[in-house]
Image (cartoon, rainbow, N blue to C red; front, top):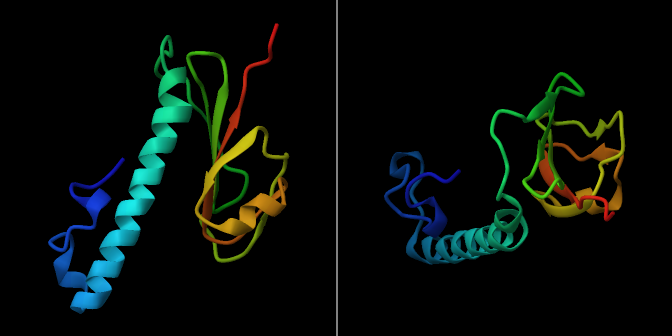
Length: 132
């Protein structure tokens, strides 16, 4: 989900929170635009082709810790998409290893371990359906 104009870092979006100078505003715009281009491309290549046949209302949610979240979806091709989020300032040891291929994480520290999450991070994993 994106806020209107977030994908290209609109200068009008939440303008009252801060005031960037012209150089920083241009750099920020470029980084935000590139991030959203990458995320939209990832969605187009990895998620969208797997949606056909998916039914709604079947997400699975668990709370592995007080400030952590695990959400899983079975996609239309029977693969599994999982979101793991640590919403705390301390690292989190997971009760089970993250399954599948890491698609994206908000921190580079996620790639090193499949049983823990750094502080303040979200990570998405894709487990392919088993070939028959």
